[in-house]
Length: 258
Image (tube, rainbow, N blue to C red; front, side):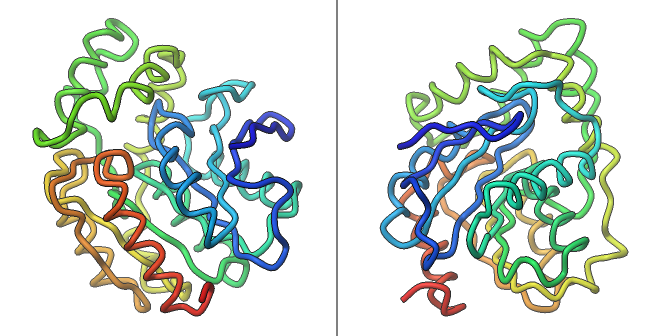
């Protein structure tokens, strides 16, 4: 993988420079996370598409403070895509990353030919059990979120790198992420989406249960849905083979790859 930085956003790419003839999967992590979430996708999908996993501002290796609105993060990602001239971008986001993708395809209706929404929803209310300890007792927050985010069937070793990055993330940034989620609500706008969308849910997701994805499927006109079995909220790390197969099948059906 290639590590690069553009402005205040750091990212990893499966190949560099990007192939202008291929679409580019732009991978956006969840709250308090980093590009490590997508290590399997960046490496294993590069045979089919350009792959880029970014660190949102204030996360991972990216500089500048984090934000507290999905719209702010969405604008930063849109600028990043334009600045490094990403060919044929296909945004793919998990949790708040999925909210960012929804914001992108709502605001830029002709820019993105396809999009992927992972373990996310049109409204992302946050339980006080998660929100309240972030600033007062970050270790307690991490232990709470760790208890919820993965399937009980998942080997914890698969999650070690991401959890190590979460420990390093500034609690104020994490609080801003969850505040942004708590304020996010595009339920009334879903019917206006025209971009073909793949919705990926996870069988054992306790943070954004599969019903969130089913609601998206029912209200987005051109959407398909797949449930990843034996996985929780971190399905790209928990079940990478099933996850990658769903993504490549979607891109093939959309004739973005052969």
